[in-house]
Length: 466
Ligand code: FAD
Ligand code: NAI
Image (tube, rainbow, N blue to C red):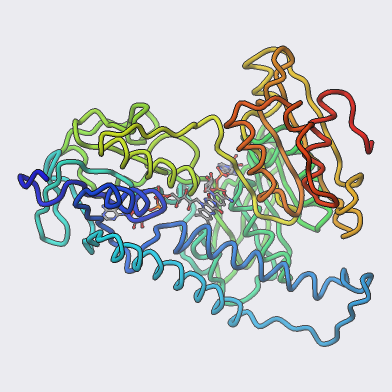
């Protein structure tokens, strides 16, 4: 090892990108440290993102099942169901604690040194962490992202909250106004609606879930409305004022027109996230940014400064934990002189509502724009025997293939199990599958997954069950 530096690799940030990069670098025999300023490892995802949100989604789903009368038709009757929100939060905190503690265990097991504190560059091979100067041959920036603020709206984490505040509300709001009909707004809006809040989502665009397939966006909006969520699309928020624990949210049509006000006891601002480069002192190292403020990188995750790399939410691409993790593995392998690659064309996206909404690859609109003619196969869960048996028939599978080659370009699934099912299409796409390959793969009966096979058969024009 080159002892000119304190470490071979220094990773800044211990989220899914950074902790994975550090562990893989150590596995490859590199002397590795990871700087993290939070009290626990795991980044946004484990502490205030993926994990606590999924804990509340799961718990609130159980509550809604128990209280909504849905189980009575299966002959399961209850009486006296009640909500203990403190216990729900406690169980969430327990899951988070076990998982963040698990990363600390993995650091010890792999001999990754945790440098506790905020890191700032001094030059391309040197950072300062908690008053200590640390040098490394290679430095990976994995500092993640932070909430995009809405100009003129102050987040007080009591009445006006961001996702972190919305994961910890001490009581169920009577009326929650969500600003932003994206992933966070729909997931956390669903949590509080299930627990009894009236929820109004205000979205600037004419549809929720930008970036998703058009039909999927439409069907999702229909399902959320059926569940009792109010969606105000093509609407902009012009201001939020707070007085005596209540907020007044002023909105007007995005195209201009008559203004109205919404009275709420909680407002969630969820209009996106932005790269976190605050206090990193990137100028000292001379690291360039993109015009959108992300750390600019090449295909191998190298910045413009030799020895400095960037991955995850702070770099361009989807802001998703599994994208960050895969980049973490790849960057460590590249640093070790191997060939680390991430196929950014095949990154699944999942919204963990009920039903879940999942996609991988291109939307129908994007596929047409890219290759011209496409063939689309759709299969509704209404015609899937297992979904029908479980009385779980919301949603469909949509498979999009290149009309000339039959190669699968994208797939979209709305289903209670969509997040798990999308993995099979991702794997098929990674292997360059055609829709015929999926259609002629034997799927177990009776499973929701048969709907993927049938949608692929529908691309061929020959589904059996519709
Ligand atoms: P982060 O996880 O943000 O980690 C960066 C870390 O770097 C932080 O811990 C930070 O403290 C640390 N840091 C920053 N600057 C410094 C510094 N100078 N010195 C030392 N440490 C520093 N994605 C999914 O795929 N699935 C989901 O279900 C999902 N749910 C989400 C729910 C919510 C409410 C939110 C907010 C996000 C969710 N995400 C989800 C997105 C996911 O959390 C991010 O994509 C992921 O955490 C990005 O990983 P990262 O390693 O790039 O950065
Ligand atoms: P988002 O980008 O998903 O959605 C933001 C929404 O707000 C968009 O629909 C946008 O059009 C709208 N918007 C923007 N400005 C607005 C304004 N002024 N008024 C009204 N609407 C406005 O961002 P979100 O939901 O904040 O989530 C941030 C990121 O976190 C996501 O992009 C995703 O990468 C990640 N995430 C992933 C999850 C998952 O994978 N299940 C769950 C939660 C977050």
